[in-house]
Structures are given as C-alpha cells and as structure tokens.
Image 1 (cartoon, rainbow, N blue to C red):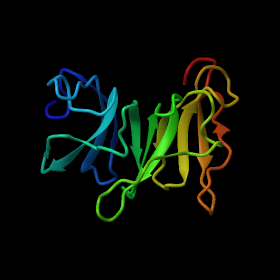
Image 2 (cartoon, rainbow, N blue to C red):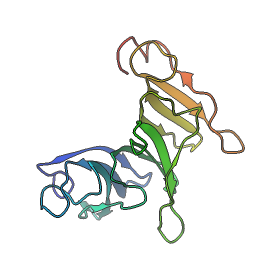
Image 3 (cartoon, helix red, strand yellow):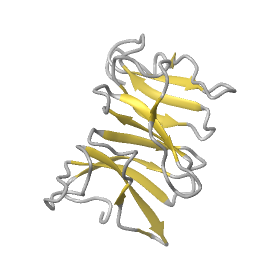
Image 4 (cartoon, one colour):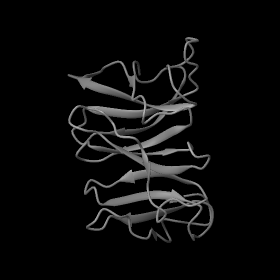
Length: 176
C-alpha cells in the first residue's frame, strides 16, 4: 500500500539485509507534470526507509544511478554498500553496479565485465548474501532457449568468472 504502491507502475524490489531499506522500480513518470513519481527516465530506482512498522515516503535514488534511460531490477548487497541493477543506458539491457561511500554518495555506475554482459539481454540480477555470487538471466550466453538463469562467482581480484548455466530443471526452452 501507500506510500510505496500507487496507481502507477511500481515493482522489481530489493530489501536490505536488515529489512529496513527498500529499493524498487517506479516507471511511467513525467517529471514536472504531476504524473507518477518524479523521475529522470522511463523507469528509475526509488528508496524507502522503514520507521517502526511504517515505510517512509520514497525518494528517487537520483543521479548517477538513475539516468534518462531505463533503470530497474535492483539487488542490494548484504552489506548495503553495492547495488546491482539493469539499465539500457547504452542501448543494450546490461547489468550495472554502483557503490555508496561513507557520505552516502553513490559512485558512477559501471557495467559488469564481458563475462556477464553480452550483446543480448541481461536481467533479473540477484547478488547472493556472500557478495561473491551473482545470479542473472540472459539470452546472450549459450543456453537452453530464450532467457536462461546463470551464476557467476567473483574471484580474489574482484573479477566475475565465466557464467555457469544452471541447467535443467531450473532452465527450459522458454524464458527463465
């Protein structure tokens, strides 16, 4: 319910490990026209914090995480320091990340490396609580058909390893 859900388009949430911060996608905003939530692009990431049993009014995560492009499907690391999300800011749906400093300022987003992102679609990102294992869907990696779910692990120098297709019965010839 309010103040998170409205008559507009909200979805794709992630919840901090302590359950007190909700980051979600809100779309179809027309900034300055009073339609939807004020946004920078077609879909933006918004934040709401919990106070007691209530969620506070959401606010736009802002630049540089949000852009004039489409940002959605957030997943926040268990330490709350890094957010992974999907954006088409380079005309391709890829997985990006941004980290927050001690002053609460988010870094300029960076694309995950070529082991993760392809010329195809990458989405539905989820960072495991170990902060070393990433799950995502893709139709750009060799799969069983449509979108398949993959897993990649970060090595000791912070590079994402080759994605592993989770195979059957997790994946099928349809979009998974």
